[in-house]
Length: 77
Image (cartoon, rainbow, N blue to C red):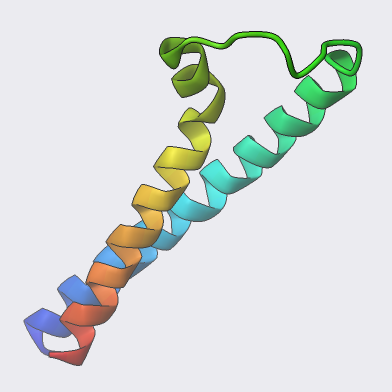
């Protein structure tokens, strides 16, 4: 196999693995937070750091999707 294809497949698989793992973590954490936080109202102020802590798995999952798109581009070229 060509070296570019091997690198592209590796990047694609790593990106997909990161995206899937952290998407599952984000889903499970949102589900557990929602169970325990039903009594809180939407009027609660949330700071930037709290927002980042709460959504970090989602951000990493999106980063994994970007990595997998890079792998696809490497495979096409």
